[in-house]
Structures are given as C-alpha cells and as structure tokens.
Image (cartoon, rainbow, N blue to C red; front, top):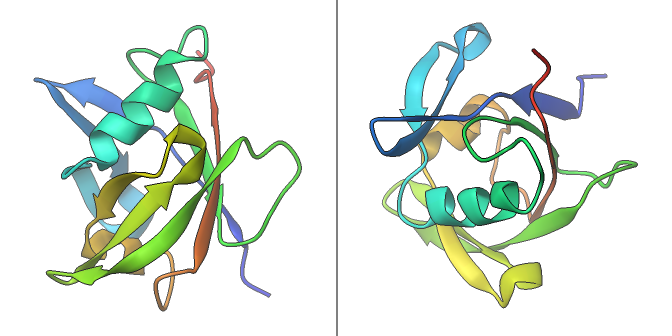
Length: 117
C-alpha cells in the first residue's frame, strides 16, 4: 500500500510561498492563485509558522489534521479547492498535485506545524 500521508516544507521566497520536494522533482514550486493566501492564513495562526512550516497532507483523514480542502473543480490543468473553515475561500492547486495523487482528491486533509530545526 502506498503511503497516504505526505509531508512538504513550504517557505516564503521573495514574496512567494514555495516548497521543494526532490523526491518528485520539484524545486521552489510555488503555491499561487489563492492557495498561497489560504496556507499563509492558516500558518499565521500557529506560533512559529509565519516564515516556514511543515505541511502534512492526505486524501484521507488522519489524527491531528486541522482542516480540509474540498474539491470545487478543475481549471487550467489544476484544481480549485475551498477551505470551508475559512468561510469557503478558494485556492488553486496546480498540476504538481498529480505528483502526489493519480486524480484530484475530493478532500485534502491538512495539518500545519512548526518546522523542526
């Protein structure tokens, strides 16, 4: 069975929220079109996470997840998701999502926590 919980470490770089994941060939992959704002807002609510953080995510609920993103629909090769815990605010996840999932999940469950030193 493939691991269903993934971990990345987003950080701010020249005003953009980006992450590196050499395991899937991504370097400074940006969050754009609202996804950066949604994640930035969520991270700012957790002490120590305003500049960089650990993002744990899965298409299945897991102990400690803090919120979820609900699939709204596809556009431009990526997919729009809504965070109902933030009033339904939307963010677009680019096709890099398919480095982690064969198809866009109906829900993404996430946990944001301070990045270990």
